[in-house]
Image 1 (spheres, rainbow, N blue to C red):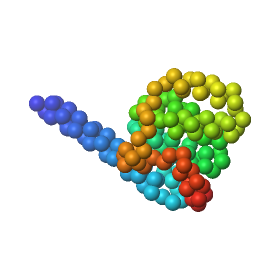
Image 2 (cartoon, rainbow, N blue to C red; image 1 turned 180 degrees about the vertical axis):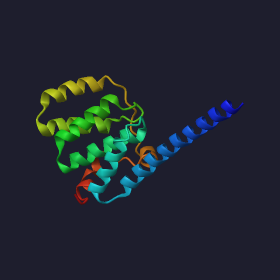
Image 3 (spheres, rainbow, N blue to C red; image 1 turned 90 degrees about the vertical axis):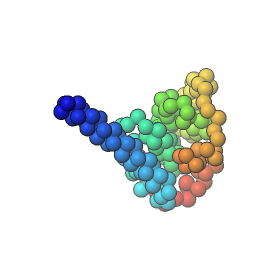
Length: 155
């Protein structure tokens, strides 16, 4: 009886801890989206990525970091993050705009061979058509047009 109570208590506490960590990632991600200082936002995205959890917010943080690095002109770093995102992120998070940004980053660094290879590779993958209103409500994702806004942020 005592053993079963201890096991039950352990299960409850571990699920509570997992729930709290997921909430913290969501809150941190939301905080980074609302910041106007890009360097602070990048630090928050990096801390979310470093949690090494298998969470949508980790993948979305990688995407946001890649978008911001692209806007800053760090095309090589951005392309590396975008490759990882487009190849490994869950399909429900992938969209055509993340692929387009990957292709643009390859073009910007002169990697035309890589561009052709990844265009063929990613064209065969099914992605969810982007529903901007849904994504903005749920995750606060920007589309590619908002890079001009990102460039205006303080670096």
